[in-house]
Amino acid sequence: MQGSQAVVVLRYGHRPGRDDRMTTHVGLTARALGADRVVLPDNATQAAETVADITDRFGGPFEIEQTDSQAAVVRNWDGPVVHLTMYGLPIQDVEGEIRAAVDTDPLLVVVGGEKVPFDLYEHADWNVGVTNQPHSEVAGLAVFLDRFFEGRELRQEWADADRTVIPKATGKKVVSPDESGDDGA
Image (cartoon, rainbow, N blue to C red):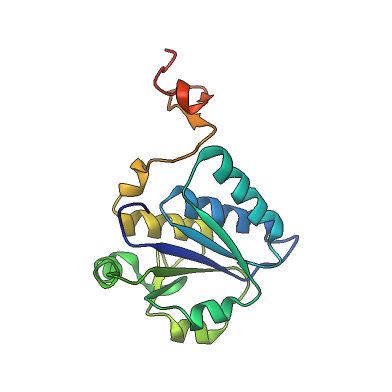
């Protein structure tokens, strides 16, 4: 997120046909809630294209990468690694420690898809749960990023947008950025 240490989200695993929508939502949530980049598996091309299209239309900065080895990304990461899992330590118990540890190196947040290998649990600096109940990995990512950024991501500015959403109590309004100063009320 602009003005803070870089955060990169890695989607670990993707089953084409089964995980397409979920992987897309991991990328969109990472973008919308303050991450600087998402790394998706090579076989998640449609998800990568959708996230790139949204970034082109609604602004950035945000980067999308693909890799054929998520394990290598984790293994070679220069910085702290958080693995989101319902089996991890409660976010409220470790969020301050994680924030304090992210100094000069970027934070890698790993969001699993299919069953992740046990060595990911061992390699992560923190295995973090936003609840210890079954839930969506997208929900876990959203809660983690909001807690990590302490709500600052909700006021993020978006550069080079073709479209801007105008908040309204009811209805929808999407305009070009040069029209965004006029609320049309």
